[in-house]
Length: 310
Length: 232
Image (cartoon, rainbow over all chains, first blue to last red; front, side):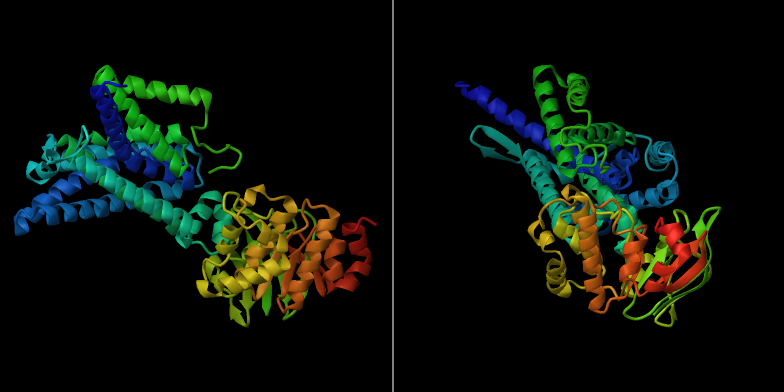
């Protein structure tokens, strides 16, 4: 540890891990919140993330045609529009594919979700783009080429933005869930739907709100990943979705802080693996960590007892 | 105040209430008695707007009662359901606040003070999770939560279920106190003797229909009730 280069490497790994984790966390929150309220896994959530990516890029294209390349304005509007777009898709999924199945056997909404996932992938593939789409460099260059130097560590503006925005969103979400009346209504719905309706909580609206909120967060994550990797593909949601889902399970599905913790562990594992063995080993190491954690703690790190359902 | 006229209700193909007539007048405690499956809980859930009405009519203060849970609550009818249904991972305070979600917050401090006046124990445990309370404490919390809606009619479903006799006596004492403050109460109970002691009137229902009605004392004295529900 006395060698300065190794300590900077460690700091860089942590930074890399946390920013990967931050993106996974934004997506994992959508899985975990929906599970918390409905007890179902929304397998189409990765596609909502992917739709957010595409919506942002196409919105930016539209804006720049309409009034020129104002980087900041177009980017901010693009992110907002992506959130609205993803939220609309998330809401539509709930309304069309899940609501009627709420009282059905657990496999029914699950199957429906897998169907929606495939449907959305190929719907985007066929109607939006069969090719990979580039994120407009002009909009991400400023963030990816500039960086801040802290001691021996260099942080790109994009990473700073990812970290800042994610922690801001998480703080807001934590406040919403724990310190507002809406948060009480949300947790009440998750814990006991009959009683929630007896105290006047509009259960259907709260469930729809959960989907809308989770989808908007996924859209933000989508834009971040799009700027980071510069490439958009119709099946991008599958990989990130699977990782985020794994993070949610790792932390204890249904548990909001658990999803963030799981995502951070996953991000750090990936960062470490990339450095030590190369990124092609990422999937091996992350799922090894998942299996190890589940063997020791079957309900995840912060998971609740099964008896009192989330 | 509350009138049920020839009410029918049920779940799916099962008809639970066949023809139920019932009235709660201002200031009364009304006990609703009957064997398991007679439709007592269904009656309360139907009034609360959770189980849909299939026939007949429910009126409240001479107006038809809407069949939606939040609308019923806004009109001042609160149900404390069977099994207490405490939110296990909300704190005691949050459980209480959940009872007032439909209403403006400015009355909350006064309402909380009233609840803590009836149940001082809840004040001590306000930051404890609901699921960690004992059965009796949970029942107190459930009643407290209903009071947070400032009920004009309080419906209690089996408040004595699974509780020790001493605690049951305390809960009934508090039910009586709440009633003396002017809140009419519709009470469903297995514990018929205890219920009839505090009730002004009572109804006995069998398979979703009225069988007997009378004052608490009349029912306590009736042979039918003694044999069927008091085990004498």
